[in-house]
Length: 199
Image (cartoon, rainbow, N blue to C red; front, side, top):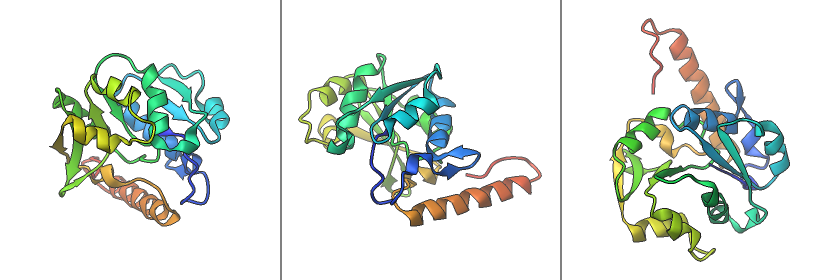
């Protein structure tokens, strides 16, 4: 999970903006850990604040990228070193609404190709990458990006039902709109007789 950026388009540090009962990054971590055994959290900008918040949590491995200003791919190359063997997910830390079901849907289809979730024709996050992609990322030119590597390696899409695969928080307008949606979903849940949370 990549949480190293400057949040320049947001105008304030988005990882610790309020979300539900916690923060944006809390939400992203909680949903990932509802399916994954462990998350490698790559920090950069204000990394010490994140270290203080998440240090000591046994299912979160912290990894600091001192070169975070070089971009997201530099954080990915840093975090890849701490991954266990096998398939692995990649997701930005500003996607707190991605449900555990998305992780599960991708995992069920895992194989030799890179898997991308899609809904209504649009691709999103997280992506699930096969073990061989570890070396591809580690040895890539630092100026490369993950999308290029995925296309070159081979990819497949997996249909999901959760539109939140598209909902990252880059601007104040996106943040306000998604918080409003979260409040509306909470209201819907409180008024449903079956107790099922809507997508």
